[in-house]
Image (cartoon, rainbow, N blue to C red; front, side):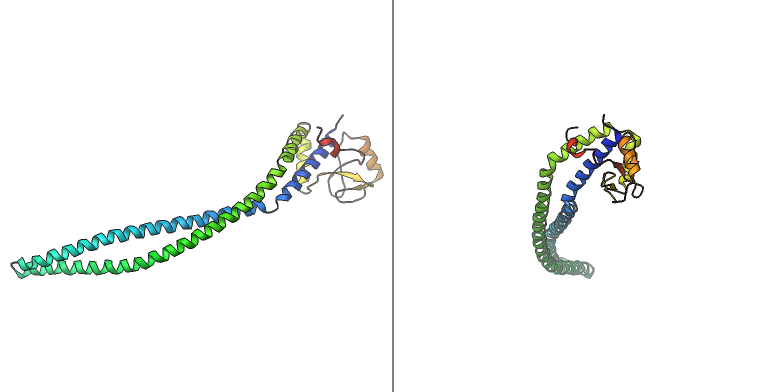
Amino acid sequence: MKTPLYYLACLSIIDGKRDELNEEYGDLPEKVSEAKKKVDDINALVEDTQKIIKEVKQFTKDSKVTIQELKTKEEKLAKQQFLVRNNKEFDAITKEIEHSKSEYIRLTDELRTVGVKEENLHRTLDQQKHDLELAEKEYKEIENELNIISSDQNEEVKLLVKTREVVLKNLTKIDYDEYKRIRLFHSDPVVKIKKNSCSGCYSHVPPQKIVEIRNNLDRIYTCEHCGRMLYPEEMEIEKQILSL
């Protein structure tokens, strides 16, 4: 009959194997996340620049229409000056003409400035698109590397998860909680006694305690030095895990 100690030892080995598989990923998940953020950030810059260029183009279009309207208005007012009947009307028309000229000059100057701005924006956009292309390439390469590892591990991980679920069904909440508590300090909460020593911290285990552990497999004994749970050397665990 399999005891709680047996299942706790199985759980420790399973979790250890899962840790090893996770280590294969290294910092790839973080790199993928960083690369994705870089792509998103550059893409946001591209969209902002495109939006500004669109606004500049619309301003240019509207300004050209306004300039043409001002020019037409000025010509019309200039003709009206010859038809006025008094100085007051003449001065009023002259003021309108000056205002139109002033607006015409202002918009013309702004168009020249905006023209330079648009050229600079297009250069910036080209650079941003180039940076985005490189960032997307880097992201795809890192993501592909992560996917290859995930694919290679997929079946093994599934088997470990399935086996772990079987193991947990054979453990009480008290035993599992104690296991989790120890695992906060040690990645291998349950270890084998090897050559009269704890294989976790290599501290000596008294012969009398080893005898007690062998004769009381339904009880949980821990190492006096590191606190890990102990199971006897002759208890075979790894070979039987996948048959659970």
